[in-house]
Length: 270
Image 1 (cartoon, one colour):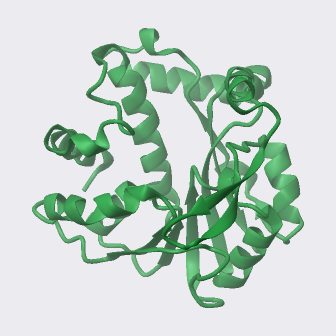
Image 2 (cartoon, one colour):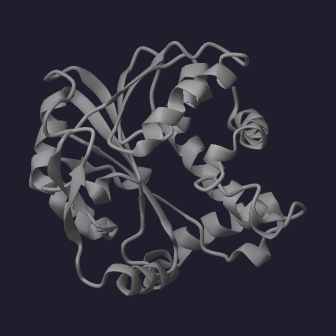
């Protein structure tokens, strides 16, 4: 199951399941379709390229709707997903759709709080943390758990927003000010928990936090995506725009740090 084929089937699922459309906005506006597709597919390809072989034990911490894990299961991987999101209830009906297109039995999932329950010590080869690391608080406690759960040669595969992005920082400041950590009540857990309030960070700040738990980034695995606005993308220049963005972040450090939106990286215990 290639990323491109998965995306084609995903659009069919969105047509049949309106509950997903408020989050996955591909059908909302034709003018931004290629722009959104480029971001989605590049992130999924990054995960596939760096996940390792099918013998890997994988934990997706913060799996949301389970999209990444469904894709990996269709490609023969076994993935355990955990989440605290209301999206959890949408996963079973999604599996009914996807099992028509391949085997999804490798994906298991659970509603659980990382700080209360998590996989066993030294049990995981890879921990995927997609759009989740900036929500985990206390952060160092979470990273300590990840370190304990990973095998000696295990790695964190992290998909994040670029905390140095000027535009995104301005939008977040208007929304939440400097209140980067909040307390919420989880009805399913029956208690209050801390939550990072879109507490995004730059690559350098993530590296600093990771080193406190003896995690080390692999420089050559760092990957930036999304620079140009939606109106610059169309079906005729889709791949050219992706290629242009990839050349730009590698050659222009100012644009990379201040204007690229997405940040992907890998950290290991060694």
